[in-house]
Length: 284
Length: 184
Image 1: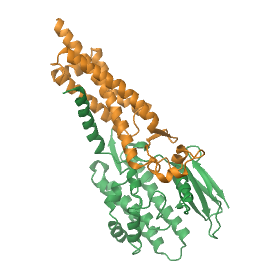
Image 2 (image 1 turned 90 degrees about the vertical axis):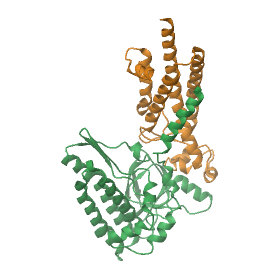
Image 3 (image 1 turned 180 degrees about the horizontal axis):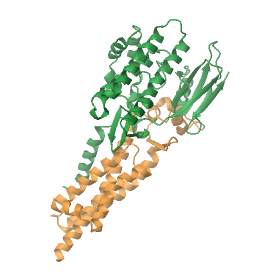
Image 4 (image 1 turned 45 degrees about the vertical axis):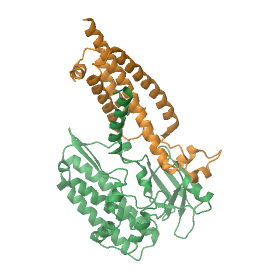
C-alpha cells in the first residue's frame, strides 16, 4: 500500500469515528418551521390539566425526534470522588427567529419541560450509579409543580396573556434551577462526592445569562436577533419578536422592546451582550 | 507487529519518545485552542491520536520489509504531507474559523452566505456584524452545507497533519533500524 492510500485509510477511520457520534448545532436550527407548525396545530386542540394529558399531547409531536435534535442530552458521570451532571437541553418547539413563540403558545413552556424531564428520568433510570431512587422525589415534585402550577395557570381564565407568560416562565425557571442546582448539589452532599461543572463548550452554544430590569413592572420584554430584525425590515416584514423572561441566556446583538399593560411600547433599542454587558435596564 | 511493540515499549530511544510526544500532542489543543473547533470537546484530540496510532501500527507492520529506497520515498511523501497540510490548515483556519467573544469560544464559518443575509450586508454592516447579530450562530448566516464542508475539511486536514508527523517519525525510525541491522 502506498502512503497516499495509507492516508486514505486514516481518513476513512477518522471519518467514520467523526460522523457517528456528533450532533451539530445545526440540528436545532433545522427544526425551524418543520415542527413548529405541527406543534402549533396539536397544542391548540385541547388544554391539558394533568401531566398525563400533557404527556399525551407531547406524544403527538414526536418527542423522540425533538430530543434527537437537541444540541446536548443529559449527562451523568461519577468516579474518583467527583461527579458531573447536566439535565439536557430543553427541546426547541419554536424556531430560531421566534416564529411560533412561547408568548403566542404558552403551553409550549410546560410541554417542552415535560419532554425534557421525562427524557432525563429515563436516562437516570438507565444509570445504576446515578442512584435513580435519589432522583425520584425530585421528578415527582417537578410533575406536581407542572400540574398544580403550570397547567393550573394555563387553565385559569382570569389571567391576561402577559401575566400568564410571566408565571409560566417563572415556574419553568424554578424547575430548571431544581435540576441545575438543588438536586445535583444534594446528590453531591448525600453521596460524598464533589460536583464538577461540565464544560460548557461540550454541551451548549456559547451564551451568557442576561438580566433585564424594567421600570415600571409589570411589563413584557421582547427581543429579536439583530440579523433577523434587519432581514425582516429589508423585505418589508414585521420582525418576529420573541417574549423572554427577566433572566435569559443570550449572545451577540439584538433589538429589544418593552410592552406595558396599557399597550405603551418602549422605543426599539439595540443591545449587545457579552461577558461585560449582562445587565439591561429599560425605563418607560 | 514486534517492531511496533518494541518501538512503543522503548523508553530510551529518542524516536520512541518523540512518537509518544506526537501521540499526546493533539491533546495540547485542549489547552491552546489551535485545533479545529468542531467536533466540540475532546473529540478532535482523540480522533487525531487514534489516526496516529493506526499509522504507526500500519507503518511498523508493513514498512520494515520494504527496500531502503522505497522507505526514503515514503519519508519524502510524509514530509510533503506534513508541510502541505500544515500550510493548508493555517490557511483554512484563518479563513474559516471565527472567535466568539464569550469564554474564548470559536466556531467554523461556511463559504456561501445565505441570500437573505447578503441583502443586509454593506460597508457599515459586515459579515462580522451579521454573525454577532445572529447569536454567533453560523447556520443563520452561511448556507448549511458549506459549514459542514468547512468543518469536515478543517478536521481532516488537521488529522492529516498529525498523520504526516507520525508517518515521518515511523519511517525515519524504521530507516535507522534497518541501517543499524545492516551494519551489525
